[in-house]
Image: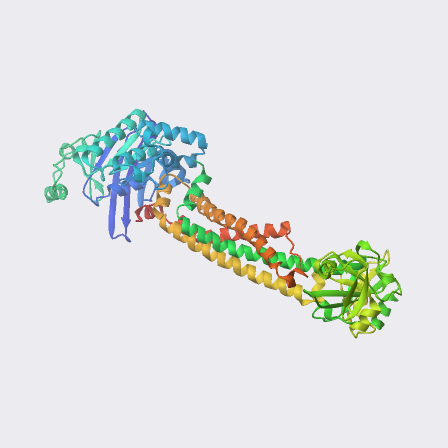
Length: 262
Length: 371
């Protein structure tokens, strides 16, 4: 197992628009190295914000985030941290439109001083891994949505990071393509012992994770069974809030209770 | 894929815009090269004038707007020649007038015995001889223009002269001119007892600069010129063309920089999301800076190469005008080409400054949210 993939989020808060929007509010989360965690919750609950903070694309207002032993508040070179430890898969592939598949996969390797020939060799190997060897000379506009996400997955793996952060990677794909992309993402992460944090609205995809972390209003929602074991009683109105949480996405079935370790 | 090929790929995305930007900068650099070559040619002509006759410096009329308008009296000539620290003083009367197709025919009046001390490079025939007042020596270009050779007779300022020698002039102005005995030229131009300038050679062991300063401080009418940089004392033309060269070059650089800035701002703005993606993939700000400055520099260096080629062609085209060809030989020095490249680099960096600052200030999250 790759020990470089641990994530510790402690008391993290993040606000936007001069504090009017509280995206995260005392967020705590521990993800073990090699674990596959699905973050679920309604839109605006802070899932993507959390992912961006872990990727050091933004800074928290308070709290600490430690990834692979790196305390991001004290990390002097966040670019190197992103290049070395984080692989990102976005909802909209985010491939560079003028580059071919093999060139796109090489992009994260520039900052690690990898030689041009080695970059190309490694990119070809990764494209082979995601089943895109035949399309390596194609530009994104010549690829289907699923193929683009495969290239994006190959790019995320370029520097063999310990953590893969996937922000609704199947959100723009049909269900068949989405499932294929997720199976691929899961398998490459498991093979490499990489931690996978997935943000999704799709319960069927969330159910594939080792653990589901449910979020509401910028916090992790405690699991019902865990709360009862701890002697908590449900607060007045919480039942209604929980129902509202899932009624905002009526097309998704209610999620069963999963082991939850906030 | 190398970083350079990535930069090149970015430049090639907007071909029309890139081409127009390159053309804009290239025109500016063409101006810099063409004006620089012309200014260099004028300075070289001035330098050749100073070196004529192996002199250390020249003495001419103080405050003269153009050397050919200078008038030095016999009294001043005698005074300078009488100094103990001066070896020889050659008085030259220069008359510039139209002759045939040459609007700047320079007839140089000089005493034959003095011409013999520091003669021009003789191609054929002989030098002027003392007492032979009907003789003339023609520059090879003038001989060609007039269809004359040794033994021919040519009419200058309305008087017939026998051509006794053909010389190779150092610059077009001299090569297209002639030497005739001083007394005859003074008579033909109604300037008896006067010369245009004195070419002074100091005695061995004397400091030419000190002698020049002594002559200048001891005379109310004379000024001395020891180098091209001092040429403005007797001729405003070189200074004027230098000033015009500087002003137009600065303008060209400014216009070029504005054009590149505009192009790069548009380019960076259009690629805001891509820059965010690159930051998310771990690219440092320094690499983003290198990417944008590299694109700008490449544009400008291509423009510099094109501008230099066009500049050389433009000055060659200028020489098709006989009036210009007769007195100007453009000078293409390595310094001029380096200056053109320096302008390209300067414009490239200046044009990339603001777009780079904008791109680097953008947070990765803002950039990723950009549509």
